[in-house]
Length: 390
Image (cartoon, rainbow, N blue to C red; front, side, top):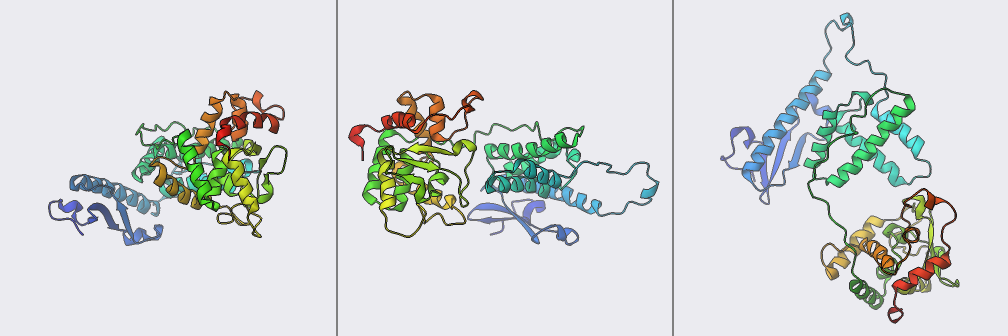
């Protein structure tokens, strides 16, 4: 539904509403259409206010016109360019795409597909907005423009900060490797405090027990996955990507062996570990191995020999948890709770890190083999009262 005549003539033809929300729509000029994947730009303005939509529309039009002008100028031949004393660009620095290739080559050994995917995604965001330039030709205003663009797209400040961290790392590595004498334009970009981050809260002990009891009652593959996380604090992707051979229930101390697989990598080197099985997690492990099927995977609904679909698992399990515990409760909350539960039984902090696979807090903690399975079991069994044993 196109807006009425209350909006001034400048913005009238570029705005329409859908379910009372305003959208900006403008056709890409023919002479620069080759730069775009589509012939029309459509952007949700995320407002039902006609005044706010009109103001946003004016800003978008001005920014697009400025950018389109730069595209047109970039294709012009400069008359008598051979008579100029200096060319407009004399940089010998690698372009951002080349810097990314260097970064992935130097830092990517042993890293997961997530590392490569994040690198390409973040750097391509810069290139798509600002162009693939030599790294010393980006300015601090370019970095600010990228930040503003991402905020307008609806990204949280925490996500933008992580993206900038990758961009900074890519450029810094190339500066060091090439011995360049230039600044990193993305190194000190100010990030406003918009208080827009979602806090992940630990799940309370009573709620944990309630969910564990319901998991035992329903007794299916998804509930086994939740139960296995609940008393181990493992990451969702770690559990979803387990093979049956990783689960050891017939040992003197039952445990799960968390290691990398072709179908599922691990977040950090500290993630490789053995975690004792107690309480609901031990019950779940036994149920997984008792199941009569030919699959080598603990959770074949989410894992095959090519990949582990942890995003699908997260969506399904978080929805189930929210329906029972309310908004703000997600599967990752069990991991936060595990840290609190181990603190409550006075477990040493470095041992907590080893049980949870958290990166260790100091250099000294990285020396030696760490705690044995028996010591881990000594502490983790204390988080499950005997009366609550499965």
